[in-house]
Every structure is written in C-alpha cells, then in structure tokens.
Length: 269
Image (cartoon, rainbow, N blue to C red; front, side):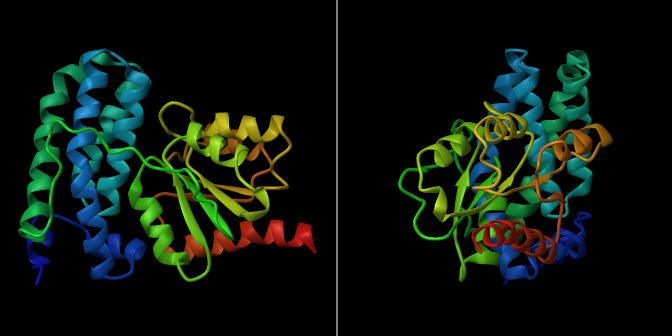
C-alpha cells in the first residue's frame, strides 16, 4: 500500500490535490500516467531552451507547472512558474542560469513520487519525447472534446464522464481543429479548450470557430491556468460559455461541462 507520509513529509498538499482527483485511487492512477511522460516533457523543455525557442519553452513549463500543482507539489510548481514568467518577458539569461535548479527540483519531486508509487510505475526513458496522441476515428457517439497538452486533464475528464459520453483528447489546437473539421459535429456535444498550447494555441482555435460560425454547433468552455485580466477579457470576447481555472474540482468541471452541453441541447430543442 502506498504510504502518503512520503508525500506529506515532502510538503505535498494532498488535501488540495484531492479536491481535483477525489480519492487516492484516482490520484495514484493519474500520477502513474504523469510519471510515464514527465521525462519526455523535461527533454522538450531543454530542447526549446537550447534553441532559444521561448514561445514553446513557455508552453512546456506552463504545462509542467500545472501538472505538479495537480499533484500538490506547489513548491516545485513555483519554480516552473518563475521560468514561465521569464519566457514571457522574455528573460533568457534567467532561464539559462536557473535551468539546472529547475531540473534538480523537478528530479527531486519526481523521485519522491516514484518512491511513493514503489516499483509499479514504468517511467519513460529520458531521451523519449511525449508519445503522440492518436485522434483518428474517435468521434463515436456523443463526444466531449478536451483540448489540452496534459493527458492528466483528458484522463480526469474520462473519469468524470465515462458513463455518459465518449471523451476525446486533442493535445493541441491543430488536432482540435482537425477533429472538428473532419467529424460529424452532431456528435460533438462540447469542447473544453485550454489556451496555452504548442503549435496552435487556444485563441487560434477560437478564431477558427469564429471564422467558420462553429460556436452554435460546438459550444466551447475554457479550461486554463491563465488568470490575468487581459486573458480573461480576451477569452470572453468570443461567445464561449464559461471558464474553468486550474487547478479545479471535479464538481466545477462537471457543472461547467453540463452547462456547456446544455447550450447545444437547447439549440436543438
């Protein structure tokens, strides 16, 4: 049995994390998935740092910041947040000077998580990238599309709605647009859309919806860790239904998703 004292002794806020995951069984399942991919994400961050691609560096460290927050590792998340801010400024000198500290702190917390999980978790080799998400032929029946570069959010949404809807992940805006463009939109009940993603970001998806008059066909709510006033104002300039701030609770996700689906149901009635 997993010893939660390993986590709490290392300043992991389990109470806050369980507001999202609900129980330790779900926490453990999500943590195992995170550990299978985190090395690949760290390698991606290092790659973008080395080529001075601070736009994609910001996306990766933002995603990792959110992931560590989900599991209650707020001290580690704070280190990633500082790098996220430095990428926005931009301040490459800070990123280069502090990168070893970021990796050391991430490794420390990953090792805490691995010790807690024991020998059951299989961690990806450090030279592997995050595995691609397969999206073809996935819109079958009533479907919720979750657009987020974190599989944790997809898996969490599946947990909440598995008995009611098919949940499909698009890991970036490019895949989200492809799904909507090439699927029967009658089956897409709603989209939960992150804003800060690689390749095509959430605002570009919103522009695509606006230019193609899709908001009535596929109602959208935002799910994001960005909470500055400018971002919120910009998002609500589009006809979105609502916004969920990360980290969030199961109750909040369910309430907003039901509210979003209701827009489509009311349109059809």
